[in-house]
Length: 299
Image (cartoon, rainbow, N blue to C red):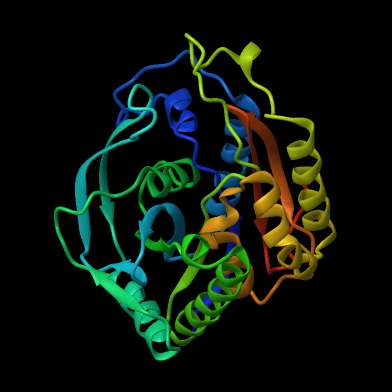
């Protein structure tokens, strides 16, 4: 029987990879955003202690307008360039995909009445949201990944519809995972509040220029993080439409709602590894560990 061994919020500003200077990324930096990067490093160490087979990533930057898509080929190798920050992110990736698990989730979602599709174009380029989250959580790239696209229900209908459809997808993915022999880590790749600066500082890693966009966004972020720490995830999901509207949050992709539903709506505290602003956006690194023996209070 399969198992979800952890769920993570893993924000994907390309600045994280840029500041880390991995060999796969062409631009070079002098560092920056240490609170987030050190939090990522601690969470990555925790994941190394867990026995798991694959990382399933729901990304806001693989946007699809007809259904939810899953990768259907075992390997993708190319270069991913951030369309907004090409000066920071030009990443040469070589990614293994667990096609068996990807197909199982696709089929379960289809059987639940969700419009789905398998992406089997070898020239398809992996989005930077998937790459940043996967790299920061597992820089060795020794686990296969299963990216899931973000069907933009938010644009066609409303945040409320997005929330409900993300929950349906979460239930389908949970069913597929439990019916498999896979132990997986779920990853929700997104920031919280997402109003950001429109002008970049001359030196992107100049930390004297970094702060949250406004106090209202900060208060909203802290509200959600406090509820996460209390294990009140049903309340967080109920607030999600209003939070998303008020802060232009990246939760509009449905990724966080998907993960919480797939995990059965946890009622235990989240592990908070760090919070910091990147170009005005609010970013939290957090994890939910279903195992009380390995669960810890971080922040």
